[in-house]
Length: 301
Image 1 (cartoon, rainbow, N blue to C red):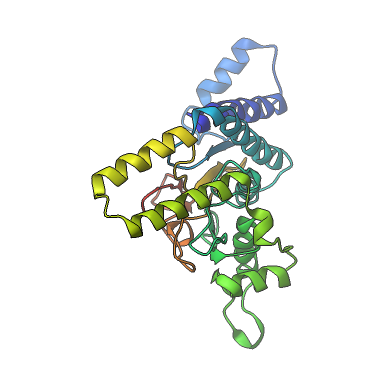
Image 2 (tube, rainbow, N blue to C red):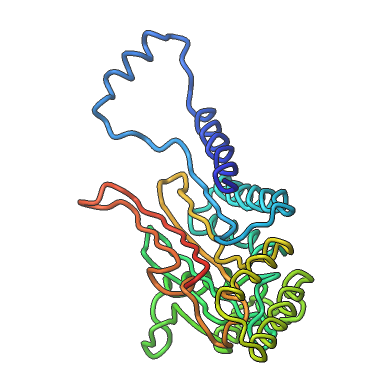
């Protein structure tokens, strides 16, 4: 619902802009004849498309306004890039940055903490025009993981490195962090990325784990207590955020970003970073008349 309410305005804005650029004719009958004569011609693209989602999982009713606002801002960020002439891959990255910067999503700032009380993020992006892909997994100390994934994608498009080496498209852990910093993406201490919501959830989950290790409560009772706490505190597990974009030239792109499962083992890489799992984008070509852009989210993978 949040994503749907956001993209309706986006389509209207881009369509109106495209229509304004088309010359109008006062001769209605002349226009009708022209339209009739062009029925068999390939339709011309007149607008772009942006769709974002704030992730699967339990979304607290008390934060519904914040979720709607962040989705709207993410859509608007992408629309602004499209209006400026950016391609789909640039616009979708811009939308993801807005989602990552929100303390209410499980991506970038405010992500779930792992067993060690640290934030490790996954992100990936795919360009439907070139079919290039970039991703990072279990990366710490970077505020916007999608920017690293996008930079990996763009660097790979430049071709081979010195001595014929193949450029990376998927990096994890410390290697991903160091590569990002060496390519001008500023670091951000993990403790500064944690919010009062994520810290509170971590402490609550840690207490549950400690209690579970001391007491044999049974699966059903534990499940009921977990569900009850989620409803009361509005802190149920949220997962991967994402977006898909069609630019004014018809190119498609998709991206996802996630803080991963709460209390995950350090170093775990989730579906958001894996090729063909978190997202997919592919322009129409040859025998395939349809473009495809997919952004997934799942709470129990």
